[in-house]
Length: 411
Image 1 (tube, rainbow, N blue to C red):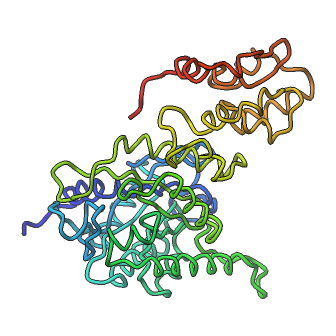
Image 2: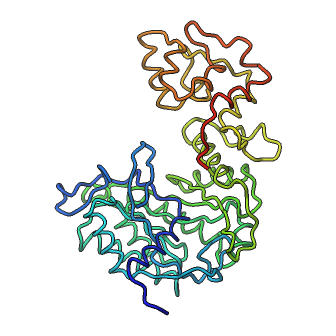
Image 3: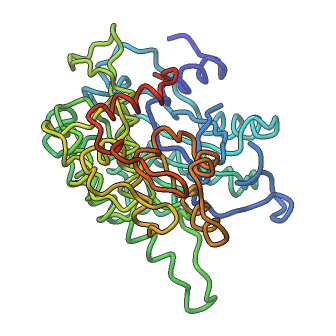
């Protein structure tokens, strides 16, 4: 086998890492090199771009330690039976790449995942060593996210939490049946046990110690997980139910959805799901409604006959069209909970509405200046000088809103 240069390895292993979705740095502790005496920070300007919930764009070096893998998961491009070009970084190479890229202001952190080579402990040990050397030897203060391996020892996971800002364990698929069928070498119960242990460790370290009265640093950004969607026949209803259970059981910061779309010349026998990226997008929107808008999982899909989200319109608009009796909502008088249900109104816009109406009554033009699409909002609200009348119950309302909000597709 020809010896690969670091540049060639980077091309292979950064491309292989694009299937790992959970890489936002929100929730980490703020550090700054000028105050810590090291190099790097988790704040300020920051070749993978990801967005934190507060809207910050963050830049991460997102790579795999290796795309060799002993497992043969049907949905994974890096599975052992896949005919892909393989590469493997050494610990030294990852540390040097991270520091070189940071010094050039290309990145503000590292997202490191890996295929499993030889054994989970050996692979996890190398990932932990990368993080340890960055923190201890290089004094790197930037963001580090490690994708941990469920089968790795508890000692290695604990060490990972000392150096990383965030840890994640992939739940793989929405159901145990899916995992057993498509990833038979992995055990759902092992994954759940590892996630539970990590949750307990994060909670334990969050409590102040008796001696210092200070919290110990351990994965301050919490844990996340990633779920492959479209590789099996699980409906959107089943996916959202699985996500709700994960949030409740493990206090996750985020469930990331990764659309399965097999490469045409790959050896995978799984069917192509169309359109995978739009389905992923709708699942993220539904997940957002459950986490920040007070929607329950059953009501989001209450109007669906097949347990699938409507790909043509966003889930909040779909819910509103199925619950027209709840509208229109008076923007000058309604409670925040009622405003959260209005299509087109986000949490920040609602906060501004509530603040502004303390001083004056809002007109439709005011709402139009605050939100992105007044066409979506107009049929569902009452404002000073505006009432939708029969528009809310109009038979062709869906089509009218869809035409008014048309834009170039991102997918």
